[in-house]
Image (cartoon, rainbow, N blue to C red; front, side):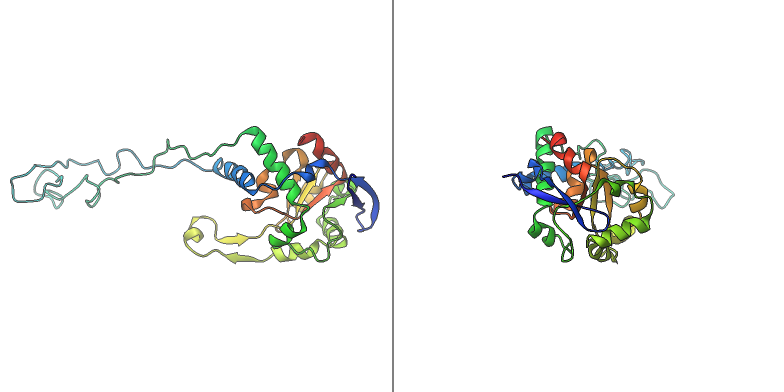
Length: 260
């Protein structure tokens, strides 16, 4: 028997039911989901490396054994403080690195197309598992239903206040408030452009962006995505499955076609 799911109006009232797509029956495979997320993350990495001549811009040369001093490379010349100081070697002040990072290193992880599609299907299926959604820390006590499907009018909302009202009516606003808390990250990440730790809240999946993106993008923790652009990282941020997801009716109907 095909499972039915309610479609809710913007007032939070059930107006009709639609069949739940088969994609929600996909087996849960966190290992494949993690690989798909890792592939997306590594494709954002920027190659890095030292200058190939770093630490070698000097005249240092070893004089060999038999002089009663260590055989380290020493800077040539005389009459300057640098003369006869050690250089070039990794153990010397101002010397080169022994094994520096190289920009040609392959830092991208790849994943097969069929595996990536399966990872997306599995992550979609995890969004209807209340246990997984709750484990991620989402507040779902007042939520009308999982999965939450809204009428297509939701895609056409133009104002943030309208989106906020709709989310309150379906009981999802509690999770938005949970995500509004941001904390300072421990460690050196503060120096590297990621001072604050920000939480992820609701993922809104629509068939077409008719204004909802501009209306909802400034709400903390929310991501908005067209169903054709879904990926494993949006559905399972950090590889942690069970993200609280709100679907538009037409986006739900498109799932079986896109991820068959």
